Amino acid sequence: MTDLTPEQVLAQLQTRGFETGGFRSPLRHFRGTLTSITGSMVQRGKMPNAKLELSYNFDKPGLPIEVFASTEPYPFPIAQISMMHSTRDKSNTGVLGKSIDKIINAGVDENIPHGDPRVKNHDFLIDKVQEWKVTTGHMMWDNDKQEETPREAWEVVYVEGVGGTPHSGVATTAEAPTPAPAPPTGVTPIQQALNLLDGKTQQEWNNIVFQDLLVKGDASLVNSIISGTFIPPMEASTMVTKDENGVFHVKKD
Image (tube, rainbow, N blue to C red; front, side, top):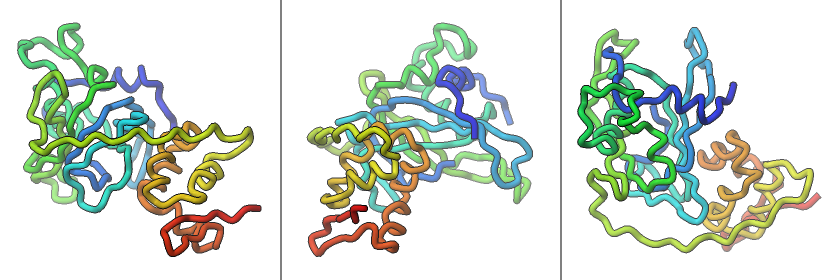
């Protein structure tokens, strides 16, 4: 897997001019602050060549996301929405890009092409509060059925101070979590995650672990925490135990 620079990622994105022609998060509708757009070249399964996988990251310190809809409980303060890049109109990135264009380029003549300085691109969304929602009925090509089928896809439905339709619920104001202390030199991301876990409940740990710079720098570790696969092996090995009050304890060397 090869990481791309933010500039290389943004150079691939667009809000209009798609060629005619997935998400893995339980989230279905949320509000948060987009902090960055990153990408890596990946090659999985039957893919003949490596392709760009995009990640839209919502991990603003002190500003946890607000979840409106999810297929399962989502207690995490951050979100990462990933999808394979495509320039095709009928694709996840095509649907997303057009939803962004409708909001941030409202009033800009639709005949003005992507690349013109009057047409804003995805980077305009960085550091802005926005809402993302999974919508249905988008016709996309199904390789297995060899035909177009209705699919779900992410859309940006609201950008604060710009436009769109926000969720009708009342937003709550969350207190900023106490910043975690800087880890000692030589500590690995996994060790740091365990250090932060010791003496805390699941929710207390969730509130600080994603803000730690060392942990945040390890994408695989972050994904394992979000997916719930980080702690169980630690408990199975008795490295981590949980008491009757739901507080975790980490065995010291």
